[in-house]
Image (cartoon, rainbow, N blue to C red; front, top):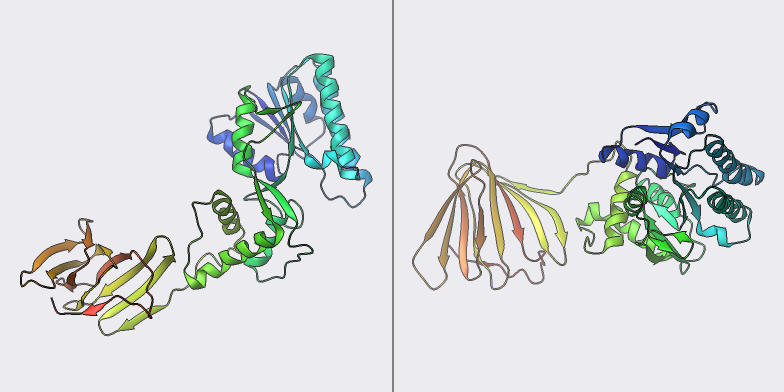
Length: 369
């Protein structure tokens, strides 16, 4: 199947082409603003499906709206008719087509061209009035406010919020791609005369700004955003794509002494916290118990001995652990416990606790095993 993608270098185009290749579509005609116009003649003669994504969002002159959003569409459809090619055509319009502004009128004109083309040729057409799109590879100060906020927050630049209560309707690029692949298979999601991406999200502008700022703060407070919320999950992935390339890493506070170190890695209110414990050879750590707090220990390097004793018993229970065989050991409540490095190298243990450490309520009581 030969697929023509106009606007191939744009936000949607780059994501779409990457996913088409993931799905095994390798015969892709990529048409961009820099392409030789004569290539469109060949592409429209041979293609089996058209993704017409090219358009103008923020021109220097408003006349460019009609030229970019109407003119190229007219040229594309004219060439398809010339070659009697009835390949399905998918066009990305905008919810702005409902509004009386230069951009909206140009998008509306492009829609009408496509519907008239359908009446004339009976070729399948899919017109998507897309809301505000966001995701990786979007451009700040061009594609979407999400891109602008992510870019600026990641670089400690100011963001502008004129009306924090303004409602935004957002659509994530991966949801767009899933819908476009359905359309490619002849199964678009329809609403009256238009096609729609079935998954969208609503959020206020001020809430969006606060959420994106919290992503940056999570590096210092070690919090993990709520990945059960679909919009938060998608926004966090988008934010990470905007990190400066020299700032992918960040330091953690290592609490070090002669015994080794203890370092908190991440904290969540719903799922507790994860830490990394390093013990020098011969060192014992722990010798305490908890009422409600429970933990999981996973030794990833070295050799250790985890020892337990129920606080009202003399019997000692031992588990030998090693990085050679990854094994999780549960730390039940009511048992005093310790971990001893019995090897010759550092003992590295990943520790999960069901609650974040609270110095006001530590629920930790010293007692030798």
